[in-house]
Length: 202
Image (cartoon, rainbow, N blue to C red):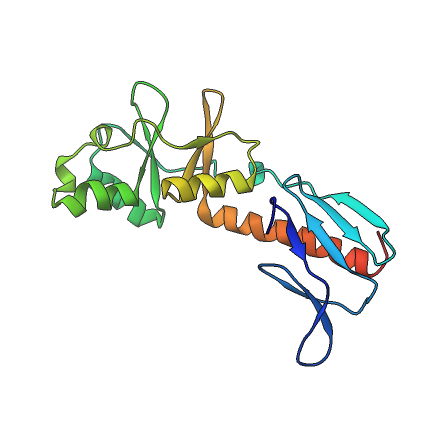
């Protein structure tokens, strides 16, 4: 990968003798030998170049996270204990709880906080209230954010949940699982584009 472009190199031959094109994450079996190379840049513009030098371009719009925001979230008051949060997360099979009543914006308490700040330190979760444990500066995104940005933030901050705010208004949460699902759907969009080019329907 150079300059943010995903390069599909000229066809190779698989064991059965069929040509395929290769990127860092996918092999695309092809029967159309006129296909030469596709570039996908950081602006999500796919460029298909045929052997005669004819260039076709199409913008693949990245999907916004809006439909993937969890709005019906579990919450607890900031005066509740870490044990209360642990019981709530266990009962609902979730990994985070929105903390309200902080005197400002809602905050987030996660299973990672429970392990790293309480249990892992040998402390009694029944003795610690959430307001003393939660991060006062959670990682946040806007409802119009793109999947790639969310994944970058999750990787950078080693978290699996992001709080979504529209200005000062809390909207909901996005999870790593939802972002992986969105990323796979974006890749399906790219595959659909390739199929359209190969079949000549572009």
